[in-house]
Image: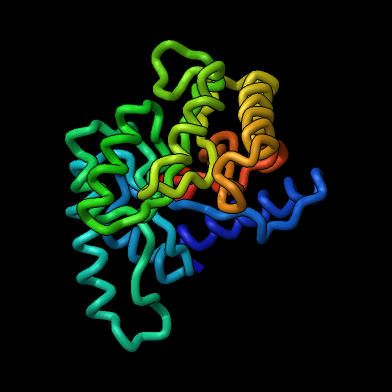
Length: 239
């Protein structure tokens, strides 16, 4: 077994253990493998291991690496060890002038944090006849250096995004503080879950509003315990 395979197995075991602690099933959890700083060979390896959801947080790296992976998968056509394609997720801060090139690659955008950005994505998606899945990023840690909609504005902004005809609002995203204090991390994720439930209670986004993108390499087990459905994991796989 390769080192990457061992790390993925460990992560899956940790997710299963976290699910047992909170009464959930592991198949409710989706891993988005964050490709930041990973080599092409390492990314090819995670795809071979069955990871078909990939995340990138830098637009300038997104298209080049996506093109390389697309070419590689075409070379592997007919090889049952590889899928025909992968799904790309934009998980980092997105500037409005980078929206068009992002939509040419990504099916999912986790980092919609302002009305102006949502409007730009909606307009660009209409021109491309595209309906991307988007998540509203909320700054649940209330750290001034972090992107994300303010907690108090999240429900109203979700309602505005859900009304846009070319966007599919499927959930919320947040990032916990970088701290060893697990209770601080847990409080951040719990707050996001509360906002998520408030939005669902208002039926904003309808049945497709069902995802919580929370948890990264250092805190994904806590995120699972607090209701995450999507984990964004990179360094725990590639380090």
